[in-house]
Length: 312
Picture 1: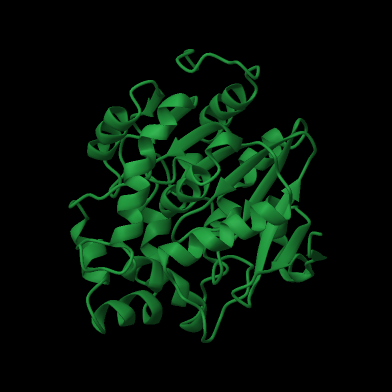
Picture 2: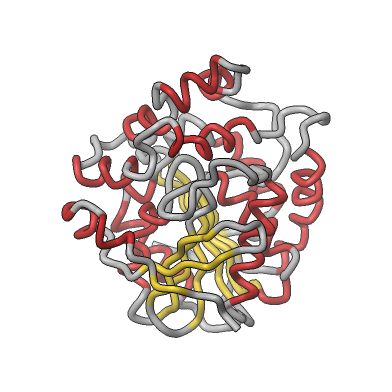
């Protein structure tokens, strides 16, 4: 049985944020001991959307609004992120744990087949989950992310990983989530309500713990605790050659540049590629209508849809 309670936190959202995020949220207590918040909107074929760092399910709000008339949209907040429980202690902020959390939620919902949309750290987490259920994965949409080992990391992110200083910058000075609200878009500044919505869960030192832990968990060396799991995911990417995949890519991403897009093309040569040259890392903010249109086309194909069909 699904252990779900309707969440009341939505009632506490500021009215301008709630107007952009008008969803009934739900809670699932996981075996790790903490409650995961998630959206479960609409009926039909399930589409799971996995966010990265430092966003939350709010990032997918426009995709949910577009799809929920014909699809079941399931969008979790990682533990410590969004409206999920924020552990003070006792939680393992690791890639392996993040994947276990997502697997537990998906299994509890008894989903037999699904489409998957991933962005940023959600790419590694979501694909890590899907590779363990590859027979259930119908389609995969990849938005500016990586799920493989790579030596490239922006200097400013590397700086945020520095011991002690990095924690002070990210948790104390909001030097990761705050700047991302400006740096992750390139076409125009975010509307004030959208910026407020993206940053809403991360307003204090304690609420930004998961943001820092995500940065800290980037496995840049073989000795890192998440390196082996990331290698396992990379080694499993060939399984995705049997799945329809679309790459939706912001061409002005300061973090996941075209270098990562080129690597995806080598891992998944059959993938449809749609590059938005003027969009940044938050391409769902920079090119909202175009990307939502393309995603809707992608997930609306017939069961035996052709993977290389051009999306416009």
